[in-house]
Structures are given as structure tokens and as C-alpha cells.
Image (cartoon, rainbow, N blue to C red; front, side):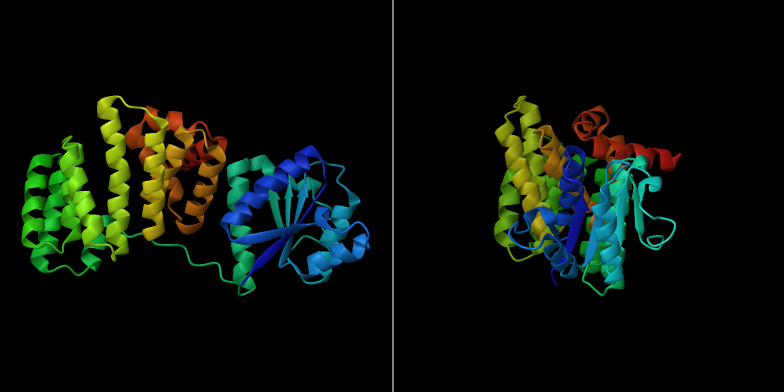
Length: 343
């Protein structure tokens, strides 16, 4: 089902800039937009605007100045009269026209809380409208922990036990022992793709890059119809490029582009928060802030634990991660917000 929002705003620099950012968020929610600036000047303006609102599923009224254009109130009132939900986005709730009466039961989003929280509120409002109107929004993806994933994949008991032991060894930094056990498992159970992933991960951690490359290529060929196996394989391919470049002090932007391509492939096979973080961080390293923020919103829509995952990544990578995310005020605000909530 195609979902459309009518954007009502004053055509000023601030209004157009905010409308563009809102349209970007809506795009990640699979919501199309329409607005009055695209009407035919030779026909009745009012009739065309009414038609655009009538054919939209809801209206977003964007208020950037206290003395907002009275047309905004008129368009919002018409939408309410036609039974369309209205989302007001304003610097503060006091700027919302008639907020104490006609529009009191509509959605009110204040920009004074910060752009990240405003974007989160907008996502929540749109999803609420979709749910109430019976539109498809897709449930949030619940990503099980790696151990739960292993348990859910119905490996034979002896294979599951060995996978969990390999994971424990790696967690204890016993990479050589973990690698040896993973190699034995892969040799004895060649259909266990997780053993191949473990070999590649331990090899990367031990700087055995050629060995990691060999097993990752084998995984792509052997498990080409297993989307989860491919997702983990492509993620490790991106990781391998990064670690090899670090070892060689090679900071060629083309290598970062290759990592980005692998992370996008991984997400297409099976979206996971950790891969989104890999993708977003590398986009920011190339100063592609708008793309990174768009991917962040996709991640937030699908995974309720996005904020916590970013905070965990900060603990793991420290200063390097801070330098990357500081290029995006929205992502930096997300992390700071989660830090404050955790205290």
C-alpha cells in the first residue's frame, strides 16, 4: 500500500530546510510526500491543494516561525475536517495554531528537545498512524543474541556444543585455540557455515588475512542460498578489508568504499544492528553524513535497541568511534541521549 504525507510549510529558507530533513526521514519509512509548490499555476490553487490533501494519508504541518503563514492553519484544519491525522512540527508547542482546541488530539512534536528526539517522535507518530489506519509498517525486528541464534538454528547437539565452546574461547581471547577447534569442526561438518565464520574471525584477529580471505570466498560459493550465512560472510569481508588496511597503514578511501559495499550486501541478506553500525561509521569516515543519518533512521525503525548498540560500540572502540560519529550532530546526540538515560 502506497502511503503519502502532505507537507504544509512556509516557503522560507528555514521552512524548506526542515521540510527536506523531514522528507528524508519519511523516505526511510516508505512514505511518499506531496506539497503545494508542485501545483499547476493555471488552475485553482485551493482546489489543487484540497485534492493533494484528500489523496494523502496524513498531513505534516511544519512551523518554523512564530508568525506562521495562516495557510498552514487552514490546510491543517481542512485535513482534520477530512478525517486526516495531522502531525505538527514546531520549535515549541506554543507555536502550534489552536493547539488548545481543534488540534489538541493531533500529534505535536517540539524541536526544542533536540533534532534526534524530534526525529524519534516523528517516526513514532508515523508508525502510530500506520497502525491505527491498518497500513503496513512492518513489525520491529527482534534480533536474538548470537547464542540464541545458534540454539535456534537446530544444529546437531555436538555441533552446537562445539560452536558455543569456540565462542567462549574467543571471548576469553584464546584465538589460536578457537581457530584450531573451528577448523576441526569445519572439516568434520562442512555444512556448518558458522564454523567457517569462526575461522575467518579468528584468522582476522590473528592477522592471518590470507587464510581469512580464503575461507570467506569458500563460504560465498558454498552457502550462496543461505542469507544468514551470506550476511555474516559479507560483514567479515568488510572487517577483513579494514584490518588489512590498518596493518599496512593503508587509508585509501577506495578501500572504505569496498567496506561499505560489503556492509550493504550484508544488510540486504539479513539486517543486523552491528552491520548498520559498521556501515554508518564508514559512511561518516567519508563525510557522507546525510547517507549515514538515513541509514541510522532505517536502523532505528527496525531495531528498538539501536541507541544501546551505539553506546556499546562507543565502549568498544572509544576515541576512534567518537571521531567518526562526531561528524553527525544527530548521531552524536543519539549517543549522548543514551548516555544520559543510562545514568
